[in-house]
Image (cartoon, rainbow, N blue to C red):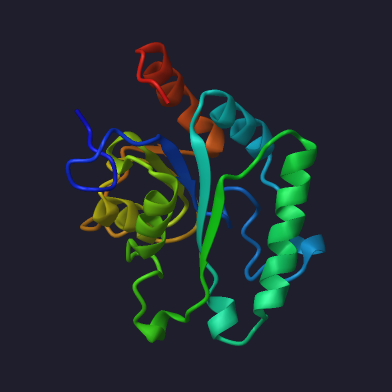
Amino acid sequence: MSQGPGAGGPVGRRAVFLDRDGVINEDSGFVTRPEDFVFRPGAIESLAEIQRLGYLLIVVTNQSGIGRRLYTDEDYARVTQHMLAQLASSGVRMDGVYHCPHSPDDGCSCRKPAPGLIQKAAQEHQIDLGRSWLVGDKQIDIAAADRAGIRKTLLIRSPYPVDPTGAKPLFVGDSLAAIMPPLRREVEAGDPA
């Protein structure tokens, strides 16, 4: 039986951890303004179905543009509020949004591939990482999941390079919709949320 985030703890909740750019919205470089945030086709519908299946929805995103001084924390907050409002108007509620504002050279524990964002969310939401999923469009997303103990991963095809010796996803697909068949199978098999 899976254990919760604390050693010997009760079984925690299931979640789908999501990278933002390239998974939820189009990755057009640094998204610094709400008007530049464009949902990927089918993303809202997939998020709604994931939520209906009983999974928590948790965003874990690197936002190094803040650390590089390309945009501010306030810019990021405006884009995030826009995303959340658009999702809410479609009946989708994100259970958590976590970001790393550091540049790649800062050596922090929250920038993926480090597992800090995932671990923080798991602790705050009583998430069982062994029963959870991560969806990303870069190999660093899959590596962060692996380091956090998430084995169920979906890598969305993207122009980013993949190191054949690096962390391997469980599935590869073209969009967030590719996660729906395995999630439905889990629910049908009786794994309670």
